Image (cartoon, rainbow, N blue to C red):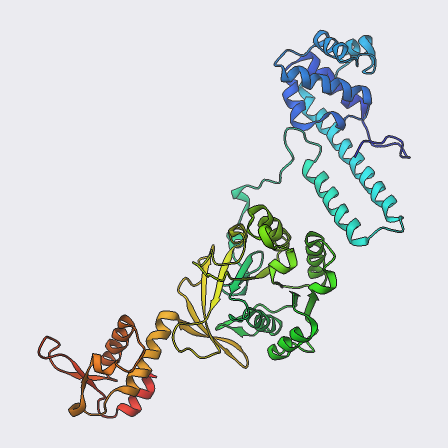
Length: 484
């Protein structure tokens, strides 16, 4: 936005400080590095001073000395000498300069006045736009945030943008503590991606039951959730989403706020994302769920596989996480599946931008309909790396243990049911497992554990010609119940 000097009352400025900076540069070349660090030509209030400083920058870029002679030469060549005040004004700039050593302070004064003027110009422009009958509040709000944040970052600096660097000495151990909304899987200030097969994995069911657990501060996957309001962005139409809400126990819950894609489909995703973050702050939400990211961000066709488009899609969620929200984004898995972290449909840049990656899959074998395997990779040590078997119950998802432990437990149950009940009928492992769909390593772990626990007995030497044969020991029925 071009500077305006016609706003009443008079705009903030300090011409004496501006002249002191320019005079210091003319007297000492080293002062230019100080000026460049803090100032740009447009930071000067007086047009003549802007032209002079711009000429000084040109001379500096040529690695030439800056003095009254070289400055007049440059301005003459550019046809700006008279517009910059003329030869006499340039010669008089250093006159009465207080102290060259205070150049940094003079530059800071000039920069601070420039910031105040930018704030005034920006506020005046937004105020003027707000009176337009065609103005849209969300658009103006987003514009105000962008422009005022831009001013805050620039902070009147030239060579530096005034970036908000921090120092390790300023960070306490308390700052490193993670606030978990769902311990190990969903954290405040972080983004979790949940992927799964379309209409098969149960992603929405998982997300809605998590939402209820957060509303209640109840248990989910064996851990207690952080309690608080939830905001849910759904791609589903009214009837199907209402049915899913009913199954999850969310009908009538005031803390569950949801937005349908159909109602805002004409708006840009970035605008929607900014407005959603503001709404989350207003209602005090602790969890934001986006189901699905592809639908809400508009990713489709070739754009779905482009890294740039993927990063643009996830940017509003990064802003939400930066505001302290826990974010769960839902993505469909590719038809071909793939390794965890590379199975989500679309660009892998999205996965690279999140903090925790989850994949919900049906267990192998003859698993019941309400069981899934949850795979995870994470930047946090608290996230389980071993796939977990989870089960949907009326009160939500329960943790059944790691996939390895769960498979071993199922094998133990099957073996106890299939084993003969007396030593005279003892059978070899191959016979025992003939009718059971068990892998070799899983079956062996189960058998070893049952023998160790006294729930399964064996005879034989365990070698060729005298293999182990297995049977249930006395009182096996009461003992086997403990093993199951």
